[in-house]
Length: 105
Image 1 (tube, rainbow, N blue to C red):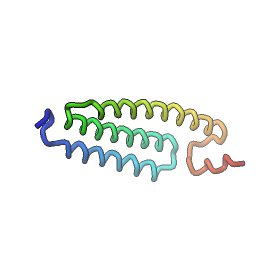
Image 2: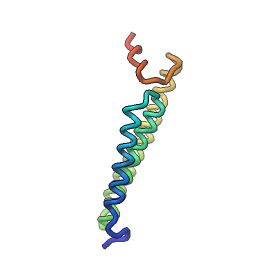
Image 3: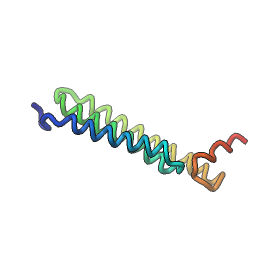
Image 4: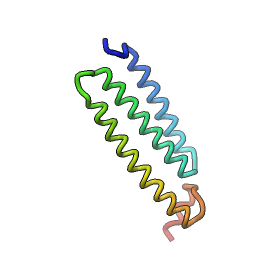
């Protein structure tokens, strides 16, 4: 028995639900800013699952270490993604992802 009892399954179910909502938001929405927020939501769901599994195995800190790496990747993704969106908005005056195919010209 660990500190959180036998409820790791609840955290994993919550994580899967949040990940599914993020994936659905990414696939359905056309706004690039909303798509970036959906990616952040999916990365946070992965962090929740990693930390929940780490709490199950209290001897090592691998889950929290990977969660910190995911946080660093999410920060880099947000910075690069927002820079690309800003450049795209200056070029086309829109943030809809279906108009990005016009960048080939």
